[in-house]
Amino acid sequence: MSAPLVIAVEPGSPAEVAGIEPGDEILALNGEVPRDIIAYRLLTDEMDLALDISRGGIELQIEVSKALGEPLGAEIQSALFDQVRTCDNHCEFCFIYQLPPGMRESLYLKDDDYRLSFLYGNFTTLTRFTEADFERVVTERISPLHVSIHATDPDIRSMLLRNRRGATSLRWLRALLDHGIEVHGQIVVCPDRNNGQILDDTLAGVLDQFPDLASICVVPLGVSRYNTEDAMRPHSQAEAAEVVNTVGEWQQIFLSTLGHRLVFAADEYYLLADQPFPEPEAYEGFPMHEDGVGMARTFELEFTGRVDSPTGVATGFFAWVDGAPATGYRAPRTTVPNSADGASVSLRPSRSAPVAVLTGTYGSSILRPLIAQLDRDDIRVLEVPNTFFGGNTAVAGLMTGSDIAAVLSGEPTGHRYLLPDVCLSQGRFLDGTTPEDLPRPVEIIPTDGIALRAALEKR
Image (cartoon, rainbow, N blue to C red):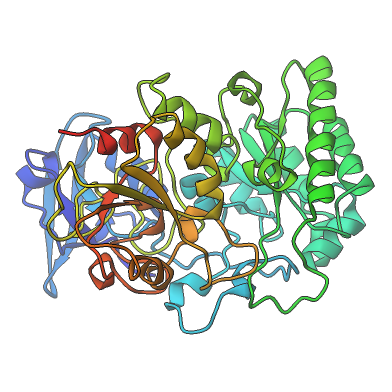
């Protein structure tokens, strides 16, 4: 178990007034040793604090006086101070199994930790959930959680997870809902495994067993070129259309029986099926925005000025590793040189220079019609094919420096190149390269339509 490490102290905060410094290790708070950032936040909510600190190998105690519930003002490096609850499922469709070799070690960690579900929106199967975990979640109101369902038939779910506990672990989902914990569900659909009639039966099972779920997203499996499971393949257009139709039919059933649509298909399905996205109101507030549901519509609303603030936080597939804020993905990230903070790398070309917006294959399908509405011949969308992962990997969050460099190497100098921050973590791409390694300077901007519109405005 490691001690919470202070990486930043807010000016004027109780932490700074008391003398806490970056680099301090917090050994205990009022005599208690926190095991994660959740416990840390509860302990630091207290009015008077006694902190046992290790500073450069010397232990000392610092007294902090503050108001009840006032933030301490010390930012912690990581979310968990004990070990991450790893995943013991062996799902055929798991993307972690499909990563190329040679990436940094943290990216290969499969977690099934309810705490990361709460903090970062990771999906847990509940196969390693315990009575002690349940008691803590209910007592401390650790909510919302995100649960992978995939199928409600016990045998099919066990087969999909390749874990016999998959047949029984959804009992915890029922218990959590019974105790008022907000839960969002996910169904990863795999062709010839849980699509077609099985998906239909799963949504019927949800209505029967878990109608009080907050929402459910239906997403397609990702297949990289490193996939070793022969049965795992991308959806055909017809299969994608079938999923869209099934979700649409069940939305109407849920709407008539529960009063809301409950289930939503990921944007990828509409792109794969070559069907239009639903209207914004059909997403009912975009509860699964962070999981790729309704991102196209929200980006359109932001870009066209129909909303005043971004709808949600763009996090990427590896939202919780390397550089993620300890208090969760909804928290602001610490500013790191050359990171995704809206700053540019190197010197910018003139604001009046031609602009290219870098994005993945899916992003280009969404951006091109929006850019065309501007009726400007100095702006273009620059699609970055994902050869690093290959397969059907096409989202902007999985763009890598090597693929971006390959595209930029053939582009002219003196143009502005806009890069969404979702593909960076602590200033690095997933392949370990940085924006400074690119052959052209780029401007890193937040991944939302408002930020893009502002970046395109001439000054």
